[in-house]
Image (cartoon, rainbow, N blue to C red; front, top):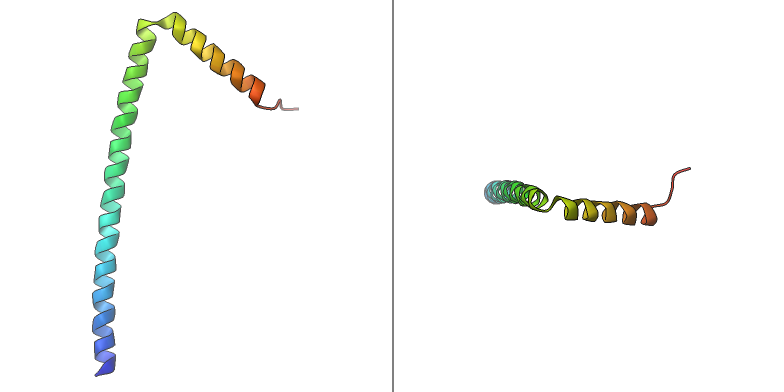
Length: 76
């Protein structure tokens, strides 16, 4: 009787874990979809800002490039 009860408990536990795994996969899929949408919106916003103010965009990009050149060690 005990082995049958243990098998039933193991089966139920397995089913519960499988359902939790499916839920986690669905949540991860939703998070990825949201991240993709936000990245597209950010890209469009940045493109719009660059089109409106190209000189400022070049100055910002140059400042970032200079900061990276100063902070990162030179390769020999």
